[in-house]
Length: 305
Image 1 (tube, rainbow, N blue to C red):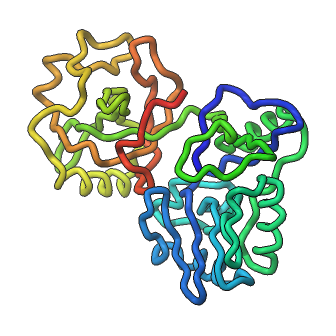
Image 2 (image 1 turned 45 degrees about the horizontal axis):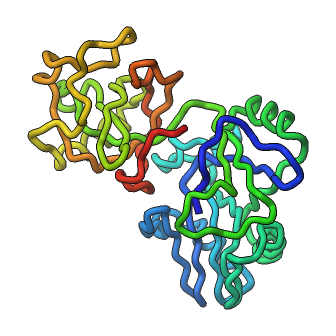
Protein backbone atom coordinates (compact mmCIF):
# COMPACT_ATOMS: atom_id res chain seq x y z
CA UNK A 1 0.00 0.00 0.00
CA UNK A 2 1.39 3.37 -1.03
CA UNK A 3 0.62 6.88 0.19
CA UNK A 4 -0.52 9.77 -1.98
CA UNK A 5 1.35 13.08 -1.81
CA UNK A 6 -0.45 16.01 -0.20
CA UNK A 7 0.51 19.67 0.34
CA UNK A 8 -0.54 19.73 4.00
CA UNK A 9 -1.66 17.41 6.79
CA UNK A 10 -5.39 16.62 7.02
CA UNK A 11 -7.17 17.37 10.29
CA UNK A 12 -9.84 15.59 12.31
CA UNK A 13 -10.28 12.64 14.66
CA UNK A 14 -10.37 10.18 11.75
CA UNK A 15 -6.66 10.72 11.15
CA UNK A 16 -3.47 9.64 12.91
CA UNK A 17 0.08 10.76 12.11
CA UNK A 18 3.44 9.00 11.90
CA UNK A 19 6.98 10.05 11.06
CA UNK A 20 7.89 9.55 7.41
CA UNK A 21 11.06 7.53 7.90
CA UNK A 22 13.98 8.15 5.57
CA UNK A 23 14.95 4.62 4.60
CA UNK A 24 14.00 1.55 2.55
CA UNK A 25 10.36 0.45 2.56
CA UNK A 26 10.51 -3.24 3.46
CA UNK A 27 8.13 -6.17 3.90
CA UNK A 28 9.37 -8.59 6.58
CA UNK A 29 8.10 -12.15 6.05
CA UNK A 30 8.56 -14.95 8.57
CA UNK A 31 7.52 -18.53 7.74
CA UNK A 32 8.71 -20.98 10.39
CA UNK A 33 12.49 -20.61 10.71
CA UNK A 34 12.80 -18.70 7.42
CA UNK A 35 12.83 -14.89 7.21
CA UNK A 36 12.82 -12.77 4.05
CA UNK A 37 13.14 -9.00 3.74
CA UNK A 38 11.60 -7.73 0.51
CA UNK A 39 11.94 -4.24 -0.97
CA UNK A 40 9.09 -2.34 -2.58
CA UNK A 41 9.90 -3.98 -5.93
CA UNK A 42 10.24 -7.37 -4.15
CA UNK A 43 14.02 -7.48 -4.28
CA UNK A 44 15.37 -9.81 -1.59
CA UNK A 45 17.40 -7.70 0.89
CA UNK A 46 17.78 -10.33 3.63
CA UNK A 47 21.53 -10.79 3.18
CA UNK A 48 22.14 -7.03 3.29
CA UNK A 49 20.32 -6.48 6.59
CA UNK A 50 20.89 -9.62 8.62
CA UNK A 51 20.45 -7.85 11.98
CA UNK A 52 16.91 -6.91 10.94
CA UNK A 53 16.23 -10.48 9.77
CA UNK A 54 17.38 -11.81 13.15
CA UNK A 55 14.99 -9.42 14.90
CA UNK A 56 12.06 -10.59 12.75
CA UNK A 57 12.95 -14.23 13.47
CA UNK A 58 12.24 -13.57 17.17
CA UNK A 59 8.59 -12.62 16.59
CA UNK A 60 6.51 -15.00 18.69
CA UNK A 61 4.56 -16.60 15.84
CA UNK A 62 5.27 -19.26 13.22
CA UNK A 63 4.12 -16.94 10.46
CA UNK A 64 3.98 -13.15 10.24
CA UNK A 65 4.12 -10.46 7.55
CA UNK A 66 5.13 -6.95 8.63
CA UNK A 67 5.31 -3.71 6.67
CA UNK A 68 7.80 -1.03 7.65
CA UNK A 69 11.02 0.80 6.91
CA UNK A 70 14.68 -0.14 7.32
CA UNK A 71 16.33 3.00 8.70
CA UNK A 72 19.96 3.88 9.35
CA UNK A 73 20.69 5.97 12.45
CA UNK A 74 23.89 8.01 12.35
CA UNK A 75 26.20 8.80 15.28
CA UNK A 76 24.05 11.83 16.16
CA UNK A 77 20.89 9.75 16.46
CA UNK A 78 19.42 11.08 13.20
CA UNK A 79 17.97 8.94 10.37
CA UNK A 80 20.39 9.04 7.44
CA UNK A 81 19.53 7.69 4.00
CA UNK A 82 23.13 8.12 2.81
CA UNK A 83 24.43 6.04 5.72
CA UNK A 84 21.90 3.32 4.94
CA UNK A 85 22.91 3.09 1.31
CA UNK A 86 26.63 3.09 2.02
CA UNK A 87 26.12 0.74 4.99
CA UNK A 88 28.14 3.12 7.17
CA UNK A 89 25.40 3.58 9.75
CA UNK A 90 25.97 3.66 13.49
CA UNK A 91 22.83 1.49 13.87
CA UNK A 92 20.36 -0.08 11.43
CA UNK A 93 16.83 -0.58 12.75
CA UNK A 94 13.46 -1.73 11.46
CA UNK A 95 10.47 0.52 12.14
CA UNK A 96 7.31 -1.56 11.67
CA UNK A 97 4.15 0.41 10.98
CA UNK A 98 1.75 -2.32 9.89
CA UNK A 99 1.03 -6.04 10.17
CA UNK A 100 -0.67 -7.85 7.30
CA UNK A 101 -0.66 -11.47 8.45
CA UNK A 102 -0.25 -13.09 11.85
CA UNK A 103 -0.37 -16.79 12.76
CA UNK A 104 -2.35 -17.71 9.65
CA UNK A 105 -4.78 -14.77 9.84
CA UNK A 106 -5.14 -12.20 7.06
CA UNK A 107 -5.38 -8.81 8.78
CA UNK A 108 -5.58 -6.58 5.70
CA UNK A 109 -9.35 -6.10 6.04
CA UNK A 110 -9.07 -5.08 9.69
CA UNK A 111 -9.07 -1.33 10.49
CA UNK A 112 -5.69 0.31 11.04
CA UNK A 113 -6.28 0.82 14.77
CA UNK A 114 -6.87 -2.92 15.22
CA UNK A 115 -3.81 -3.80 13.14
CA UNK A 116 -1.68 -1.49 15.28
CA UNK A 117 -2.78 -3.31 18.44
CA UNK A 118 -1.86 -6.66 16.89
CA UNK A 119 1.47 -5.26 15.69
CA UNK A 120 2.46 -4.07 19.17
CA UNK A 121 1.67 -7.51 20.63
CA UNK A 122 3.49 -9.36 17.82
CA UNK A 123 6.84 -7.53 18.14
CA UNK A 124 6.90 -7.30 21.94
CA UNK A 125 10.19 -8.65 23.27
CA UNK A 126 12.05 -8.15 19.98
CA UNK A 127 14.33 -5.33 18.84
CA UNK A 128 11.81 -4.30 16.17
CA UNK A 129 10.68 -0.71 16.70
CA UNK A 130 7.07 0.37 16.21
CA UNK A 131 6.33 3.57 14.30
CA UNK A 132 3.94 4.95 16.88
CA UNK A 133 1.20 7.51 16.13
CA UNK A 134 2.41 10.98 17.12
CA UNK A 135 0.59 12.96 19.82
CA UNK A 136 -0.60 16.55 19.36
CA UNK A 137 -2.34 18.56 16.69
CA UNK A 138 -1.18 18.47 13.06
CA UNK A 139 0.34 21.94 13.49
CA UNK A 140 2.27 20.86 16.61
CA UNK A 141 3.44 17.66 14.92
CA UNK A 142 4.64 19.53 11.83
CA UNK A 143 6.56 22.05 13.93
CA UNK A 144 8.41 19.42 15.93
CA UNK A 145 9.15 17.18 12.93
CA UNK A 146 10.56 20.17 11.04
CA UNK A 147 12.69 21.17 14.06
CA UNK A 148 14.12 17.64 14.24
CA UNK A 149 15.06 17.79 10.57
CA UNK A 150 12.97 14.72 9.65
CA UNK A 151 11.67 14.20 6.13
CA UNK A 152 7.95 14.52 6.77
CA UNK A 153 4.78 12.94 8.15
CA UNK A 154 2.38 10.27 6.90
CA UNK A 155 -1.27 10.79 7.85
CA UNK A 156 -3.41 7.64 7.94
CA UNK A 157 -7.14 7.14 8.35
CA UNK A 158 -7.55 5.16 11.56
CA UNK A 159 -10.39 3.04 10.17
CA UNK A 160 -8.68 2.29 6.84
CA UNK A 161 -8.03 -1.20 5.51
CA UNK A 162 -4.71 -2.19 3.95
CA UNK A 163 -5.10 -1.70 0.18
CA UNK A 164 -2.33 -3.91 -1.16
CA UNK A 165 -0.73 -2.74 -4.39
CA UNK A 166 -2.60 0.57 -4.44
CA UNK A 167 -1.68 4.21 -3.91
CA UNK A 168 -4.53 5.20 -1.62
CA UNK A 169 -5.82 8.52 -0.28
CA UNK A 170 -6.33 6.74 3.05
CA UNK A 171 -2.59 7.39 3.52
CA UNK A 172 -1.27 10.88 2.75
CA UNK A 173 2.43 11.78 2.81
CA UNK A 174 3.52 15.36 3.43
CA UNK A 175 7.21 16.13 2.86
CA UNK A 176 8.77 19.09 4.65
CA UNK A 177 11.92 18.96 2.53
CA UNK A 178 11.89 18.98 -1.26
CA UNK A 179 13.14 15.53 -2.20
CA UNK A 180 12.00 12.82 -4.52
CA UNK A 181 13.13 10.00 -6.78
CA UNK A 182 14.21 10.61 -10.38
CA UNK A 183 15.37 8.43 -13.27
CA UNK A 184 18.85 8.94 -14.74
CA UNK A 185 18.74 9.34 -18.52
CA UNK A 186 22.18 10.69 -19.31
CA UNK A 187 25.33 12.38 -18.06
CA UNK A 188 28.09 14.76 -19.01
CA UNK A 189 31.36 12.79 -19.20
CA UNK A 190 34.44 14.00 -17.33
CA UNK A 191 37.75 12.19 -16.84
CA UNK A 192 36.90 8.58 -16.00
CA UNK A 193 33.41 9.39 -14.73
CA UNK A 194 30.92 12.24 -15.05
CA UNK A 195 30.61 15.93 -14.32
CA UNK A 196 26.82 15.81 -13.81
CA UNK A 197 23.90 13.46 -14.42
CA UNK A 198 20.62 14.26 -16.15
CA UNK A 199 17.48 13.13 -14.36
CA UNK A 200 13.78 13.06 -15.11
CA UNK A 201 10.42 11.49 -14.34
CA UNK A 202 7.70 9.55 -16.14
CA UNK A 203 4.37 11.04 -17.13
CA UNK A 204 1.95 8.81 -19.07
CA UNK A 205 4.77 6.49 -20.03
CA UNK A 206 7.08 9.22 -21.38
CA UNK A 207 10.31 10.33 -19.69
CA UNK A 208 10.62 14.08 -19.08
CA UNK A 209 13.88 15.83 -18.27
CA UNK A 210 13.91 17.70 -14.93
CA UNK A 211 17.48 18.73 -14.10
CA UNK A 212 21.22 18.37 -14.25
CA UNK A 213 22.59 17.17 -10.91
CA UNK A 214 26.17 18.11 -10.10
CA UNK A 215 26.17 18.77 -6.34
CA UNK A 216 26.01 16.30 -3.46
CA UNK A 217 28.40 13.62 -4.71
CA UNK A 218 31.15 12.15 -2.56
CA UNK A 219 34.05 10.24 -4.14
CA UNK A 220 32.35 7.01 -3.03
CA UNK A 221 28.89 7.86 -4.41
CA UNK A 222 30.36 9.24 -7.65
CA UNK A 223 32.32 6.02 -8.23
CA UNK A 224 29.31 3.88 -7.35
CA UNK A 225 27.04 5.68 -9.81
CA UNK A 226 29.74 5.69 -12.52
CA UNK A 227 29.90 1.90 -12.29
CA UNK A 228 26.13 1.70 -12.74
CA UNK A 229 26.15 4.01 -15.77
CA UNK A 230 28.85 2.19 -17.74
CA UNK A 231 26.89 -0.93 -18.81
CA UNK A 232 23.56 0.79 -19.65
CA UNK A 233 24.67 3.22 -22.38
CA UNK A 234 22.50 3.95 -25.41
CA UNK A 235 22.86 6.06 -28.55
CA UNK A 236 19.76 8.22 -28.34
CA UNK A 237 18.35 10.65 -25.78
CA UNK A 238 15.51 9.06 -23.73
CA UNK A 239 13.94 12.40 -22.69
CA UNK A 240 10.99 13.51 -24.80
CA UNK A 241 11.44 17.22 -23.95
CA UNK A 242 15.11 17.64 -24.96
CA UNK A 243 16.67 19.67 -26.30
CA UNK A 244 15.14 22.68 -24.54
CA UNK A 245 14.34 25.71 -26.64
CA UNK A 246 16.72 27.67 -24.43
CA UNK A 247 18.62 27.45 -21.17
CA UNK A 248 16.37 28.50 -18.28
CA UNK A 249 17.05 31.45 -16.00
CA UNK A 250 18.72 29.11 -13.49
CA UNK A 251 20.73 27.20 -16.09
CA UNK A 252 18.89 23.87 -15.80
CA UNK A 253 17.92 23.60 -19.48
CA UNK A 254 19.74 21.60 -22.19
CA UNK A 255 20.10 23.32 -25.56
CA UNK A 256 20.73 21.67 -28.94
CA UNK A 257 24.38 22.73 -28.70
CA UNK A 258 24.67 21.03 -25.29
CA UNK A 259 23.38 17.69 -26.61
CA UNK A 260 26.57 16.85 -28.50
CA UNK A 261 28.63 16.79 -25.29
CA UNK A 262 26.31 14.41 -23.41
CA UNK A 263 26.16 10.63 -23.09
CA UNK A 264 22.82 8.79 -22.84
CA UNK A 265 21.81 5.74 -20.80
CA UNK A 266 18.85 3.41 -20.62
CA UNK A 267 16.39 4.88 -18.06
CA UNK A 268 16.71 2.13 -15.47
CA UNK A 269 18.70 3.78 -12.64
CA UNK A 270 16.69 5.53 -9.91
CA UNK A 271 18.26 8.14 -7.64
CA UNK A 272 16.98 10.43 -4.91
CA UNK A 273 17.55 14.15 -5.37
CA UNK A 274 17.06 17.13 -3.04
CA UNK A 275 16.20 20.56 -4.44
CA UNK A 276 14.84 23.94 -3.41
CA UNK A 277 11.90 24.22 -5.81
CA UNK A 278 10.47 23.51 -9.26
CA UNK A 279 11.00 26.41 -11.68
CA UNK A 280 8.33 27.74 -14.02
CA UNK A 281 10.14 25.92 -16.84
CA UNK A 282 9.54 22.58 -15.10
CA UNK A 283 13.13 22.11 -13.94
CA UNK A 284 14.68 21.69 -10.50
CA UNK A 285 16.47 24.55 -8.83
CA UNK A 286 19.66 23.79 -6.84
CA UNK A 287 19.45 20.02 -7.31
CA UNK A 288 21.70 17.88 -5.09
CA UNK A 289 22.32 14.12 -5.18
CA UNK A 290 21.19 12.11 -2.13
CA UNK A 291 21.63 8.46 -3.09
CA UNK A 292 20.66 5.46 -5.23
CA UNK A 293 17.18 3.92 -4.90
CA UNK A 294 17.45 0.23 -5.73
CA UNK A 295 14.06 -0.36 -4.09
CA UNK A 296 11.97 1.56 -6.66
CA UNK A 297 11.29 0.61 -10.31
CA UNK A 298 12.13 3.38 -12.79
CA UNK A 299 8.71 3.20 -14.45
CA UNK A 300 7.02 4.04 -11.14
CA UNK A 301 8.86 7.36 -10.79
CA UNK A 302 6.59 10.35 -11.46
CA UNK A 303 6.62 13.98 -10.41
CA UNK A 304 5.44 14.36 -6.80
CA UNK A 305 2.52 16.69 -6.26
